[in-house]
Image (cartoon, one colour):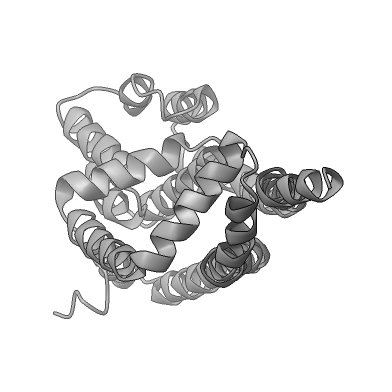
Length: 281
């Protein structure tokens, strides 16, 4: 009666537990899943807090320099009549634009933010955003492992609770958290209802790795699909933990490269012309 607070997946698991006399197991599973999801979100926030802080600080310091510091330095270069490199001209142009039209920058950022917030709430916008996340070069594989873990984990427990595979696929489609995989599993539910094997449907999608549909095929042939999916979810659970550790390690050199590029641009665009001007006297 309260879908805003209790998703259909939760209600179906509790219903299956009541019907089979194992309500305690269903509730323990839900409690463990909520705790696991919270732990995963905490690890991701912890891994991303450092780069977000560094990049935010870099943008703030860069904006303050272009508004308050660079105009005074560029006045010296302009009065000296020195030939400025293209990098310096670009930085000077950006600095003058920020100084004179800072209000326009704020309006553009606010308007773009409002538009994107509205667009990503639509069906096309949400699908485009989720598709971009899945194909992202650094985070795409990591997110894919999270979605495949949820697929195997939820489907295994729903099947073990006596829920039909068609209904289970429909339930997990909304619990995955990504509209690309949501459409895949809804289509899989429709195809399975017509008599096709699940592994045949999943094999047609590039977002599903061979390991997944091959394991599903083994489960279907042996009649132990929920047991095979439980092993698959355990595998992807470890893969997600390893990916978080690797992501944390990889972020630090990426941040160092970004800082190096920012410092290099400032040195090439501002400090070198001043140094050349001073050495010419």
